[in-house]
Length: 245
Ligand SMILES: NC(=O)c1ccc[n+]([C@@H]2O[C@H](COP(=O)([O-])OP(=O)(O)OC[C@H]3O[C@@H](n4cnc5c(N)ncnc54)[C@H](OP(=O)(O)O)[C@@H]3O)[C@@H](O)[C@H]2O)c1
Image 1 (cartoon, protein in one colour):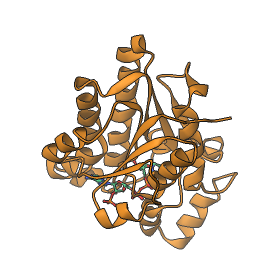
Image 2: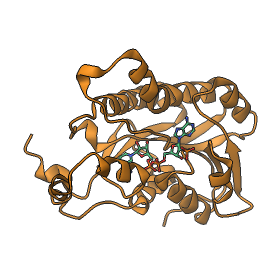
Image 3: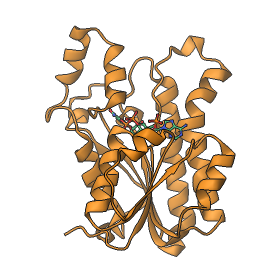
Image 4: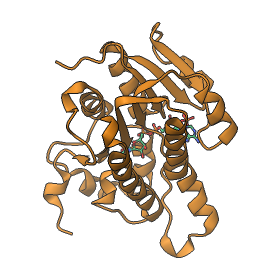
């Protein structure tokens, strides 16, 4: 039975489709949750609980991250759900485009993680979880920036796993395929209905839901996964079974 009682967990991207579900699952399993987001309206819509602390923070703004660090206790878990999708063809990419995607998907996550360790906010035996994407293994047309920004995070997570294993700290990635949230709706818009139908037909178990990601996340946050570190777990409804590439 998964139990997160008395664990203190920080969730970035807490107002997003996946983040919201993770916050709600962690609270119902007894954790104290620090929910991080940019939009105070969306943050205040998260279900009220005495164990929920909402913190407004744009993770790309250094001063806001520093003030966030002043508001969190010692953490037993960190879940990085923050993310942005930005389909763009390779031949038109400039530094500005790279910055737009990497500042959110990569740089903000690496710098926040580094600051949490610097300030000794991460407890021994804590669990760090980075939400990557199946597109690292199964790329899509126009996804170069998004896919490479996530690949960097998978490599970063392995380095965290290695550097902090002596404290019993573990670091893992979850790589979901299509999950029905806003990002999914944006992805859908880039395809014709026929192309979309073909994409959906590649999923033996159908498309995913935020609760599918939340279930795996709470397992990785719990003491049931104390011996798992440095891995990326695909969560794809069987999509990779149909990969011909
Ligand atoms: N949905 C999928 O199909 C899918 C598949 C694979 C991987 N993923 C990954 O899963 C994660 C969550 O995705 P989702 O579907 O839940 O996306 P979502 O609903 O669009 O949520 C994204 C979250 O990131 C936050 N965010 C964006 N920029 C930020 C910034 N500068 N500072 C602070 N917060 C910021 C958003 O806050 P605002 O509300 O303020 O914008 C929102 O809470 C992402 O990393 C995504 O890449 C999603």
